[in-house]
Image 1 (cartoon, helix red, strand yellow):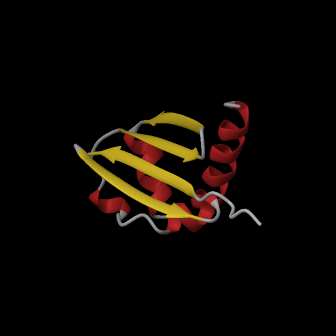
Image 2 (tube, rainbow, N blue to C red):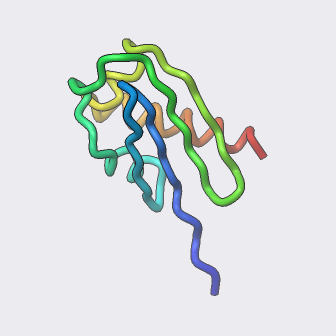
Amino acid sequence: MSAKELFKLNVSANGTEYESTGETISEALNNLPVNGLEIKTKGTVRISQGKRTAERFLFLKQIRPLFLSKLRKIAFAKQLGDLLEASK
């Protein structure tokens, strides 16, 4: 019986790295220890699961709402999942 690999999420913004893990991408996004109002600059979001890794660059007006709106988190989790699938 093998354990499913966790999703690892890394957000780099404001010169700071924020990291979290979760069984799903949505859980990893919700586990990030950051408030959207703390984000002041553009950033990079990196998702990985096992050997697969995907990265996306976001401008401030794209990255800040991710941490302020549950609906945007859900939509972005879907986009990250699609991006990770394409990186096979």
